[in-house]
Length: 138
Image 1 (cartoon, rainbow, N blue to C red):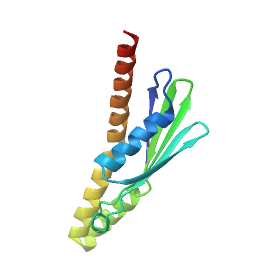
Image 2 (spheres, helix red, strand yellow):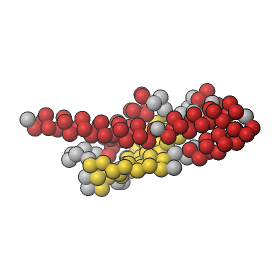
Image 3 (cartoon, rainbow, N blue to C red):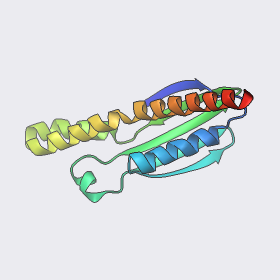
Image 4 (cartoon, helix red, strand yellow):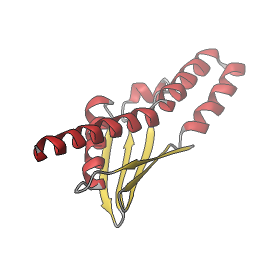
């Protein structure tokens, strides 16, 4: 499953600046292991949950975030490889083992909110940058 949004990047800012802010959000706020790197046309981040307990109860997360810059447009693509797996386990769990169904569906539901949280974080970051730029010009 993949979700994509396009943002207008203020003049003078790079995809790497936005990417590093997302990395910080993922590691500090979401408590994920995240690593990022600059690419020819943007920035790539991968993040995962390394907690054994969260993995066992179905709350493990894996996400790939690709930021691609074209002119002043920043395309942000957030994808996850575990989404369908969790839903499948949840469906099997309903029949075979109810607690497994609850935890895997909870994990899938929580993971479904991650793209929106990342997009919200980028919006706030860009609004703050635009505000800071205006203050600098005054």
